[in-house]
Length: 261
Ligand SMILES: Nc1ncnc2c1ncn2[C@@H]1O[C@H](COP(=O)(O)OP(=O)(O)OP(=O)(O)O)[C@@H](O)[C@H]1O
Ligand SMILES: [Mg+2]
Image (cartoon, rainbow, N blue to C red; front, side, top):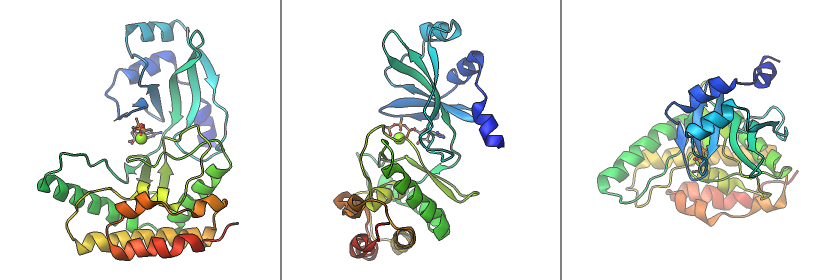
């Protein structure tokens, strides 16, 4: 009940301007994300956060529009309401549900020195230890979210930083959904859980953690079942990201045997 009330409370324009003047928490190809206490603000990348924007917001030039509630009480960091520039029929700012957690993986970009690869591997191991220690229930919730999305016109973007984990509540949160109808599968969840580090050196600790994570994910998928036959597709890209033969085999030997409910 309390969270419903919180989500119904609108930020004032002044509060929004204050949050927009702070350092963003995320900067990507689609949007810039700002912290806003119980929410986050997302501004499409092509919108300029400048004096004119601020003036327009304060003068109520942008139209407030409540977003359709497609996901019920689930939290995908989705928009609760938007500000629209009606002259251009475009969203200029979204006020979104906030997710608390750390990114389960990171983008490891070239140029990749040996040192950079080792650092990325150590960073990934730190995260994988926490991910692998989560109970099966956490992975089952993730599968339920994947299943929920098959009934919507939204899809996962399986790129880095789009899955957060809150170790206190033991919940995974998929964020950055795309407004597109596309069925995603277990392989896409693997892409969200693991970091893609090319030419990674052999490391038994890394391999063990990978195997634990993939085993829990497969176990959860088997206990929940999937809702769409297309979810049983092999994702070759996931096979590239999984480095240990054991974990790769765990995925390869099981993805087809998950029941459709
Ligand atoms: N609803 C949210 N709650 C908490 N943090 C968020 C939320 N949305 C985004 N973030 C933070 O901002 C980062 C970037 O946001 P997001 O992934 O949504 O878009 P993007 O990375 O800009 O887009 P792209 O994935 O196309 O590059 C996230 O990895 C996360 O750390
Ligand atoms: Mg993203």
